[in-house]
Length: 406
Image 1 (cartoon, rainbow, N blue to C red):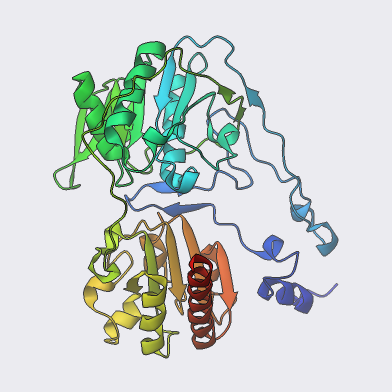
Image 2 (image 1 turned 45 degrees about the horizontal axis):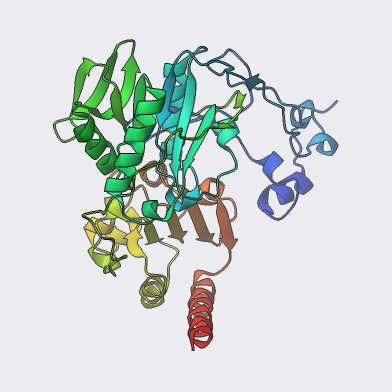
């Protein structure tokens, strides 16, 4: 038998063709990466990962058995059900639920709550208003309490604190966990702590025994203190739940919330110039790289979408964008809900800078670049034609909305 390593043109073609049903099986799996705080994150869904309960992920798809015929989609594994019939105590979590769904920050928070609950406690998630989330079971939620009502719509911190006080009186949880975020959790947690006359631990990123570690000194120092009852946790405070599913039993308040006249009135959202939003605080970023040939069209598209503009280091060095618009490890770490990368190949420093983004959309000519592998949605093609199509689609949508309103 010859020792010459022969190429498989068909396999290479499948690896390049993102529309092929076997494309995902041909891609290398990323087992770990560095998060925005320097913490090494592990792919909890990767083959061979050992979860906190000692359960090892195995490949049931046959993809590792060799042969293209066995490279089929992975069969969904039924995770073991974790039940807490009579909880000894509760760990209450108030997720941000931005857009009605659990964010990556919320899942990290639920992972931390699962650690604090152990086997005897139950994780109780408190959600305000209607939601669209259907994966509470795999996120680590044992009990779900939905506080519904028009008084919780929009910006309503007073009503929400009143609701949390009622939950606190009924369940008397051992700990309260809220995300220390700009999406509402940070402010709500501090208001709630003031109403309880308790001092919370803020920007917590790690808990060890009866102590917690939080960021201090503009994020340059760590502050160690005794574990309090109310915790405001930062991103990457724990690994999300991955190896168990939970009951998500609905619970209700035993008392009716008293109606009170709020002192704060929500007048709705105020239009803000996207260019005035700092990169670190922007929720929708439209970023350009070396593959952008028509920067005028790029700016026009960003304005039509109402997005904050960003850029790769190459585009900044070439003078197309200002230095404060640079995204990446050598620029600004961003935490956008949607990050659109146009003509960016995906250098490791850039991928580190967008590691905390929820959804990444890539527009690129190269289907094998690293940004395409990182993206949740990819569009392969010439950027100028795609950007023009985006502008046309936005204008058609807005014109249709105006006609419907008329």
